[in-house]
Image 1: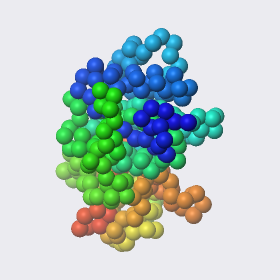
Image 2: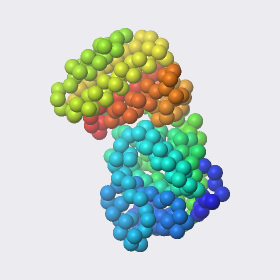
Image 3: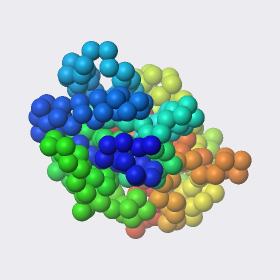
Length: 317
């Protein structure tokens, strides 16, 4: 039996918790967490280091709350969805009738990589809806840019208020519509320079070779290996599902490598592409999902030239 504001709700009860001060955050978080423990519900905190310490110090000693490391949970959107779905499935299998989680993104995720986190916030309305989850996403209004805050209100059906009320967001937009909107990424500064490679109709071997050639030893070997996988998947996907010509460009900066793959097609029809696996993998469908877990930032957009996926290894900021 579900409790609190989510009582009687089926599926994911998804709220934003937009706060202007530490006091407002605690006014929302503490009753949410203590209420979950009192109801015998699995109760989880996945906040940043400072806000975790703040909330922990405000809770009664010994309260049975699970604290996750927010930075590791929210490293990449597709990986966050995968890990949360496993956590939720395990808790439901253990008999949970409701699960409470409060989490937050790092302030750096509200900048140039916000586009894929906005997609995440929208997609999880679908991805978690099979679970009895009451989730609060905390946003410090002093840190979040105005356009990102507008996205928060469009991707969360409700907002939890410090006075204990739960207000519907009139701007909420269903995931299928939100995810289908054009969202051009912020151009990385290195893309204003001459590309290190500009290939038309590259073979997979050529695509991998230019990634290896761009490696100057500034990035961890695992990042290079992950980019190799992602570029291979993106190029193969363009040939299989796109329309020629296929063009791959690559730029190199002191702390990152940026690769883009463009084809003349319209791009994927699935609004959740990259964030959720398509099918069981036996007949493909996992390529863009793999790229989203292999890079430090992935952006997809359509324009007059067709569909482009941009992949960044290293620091995308």
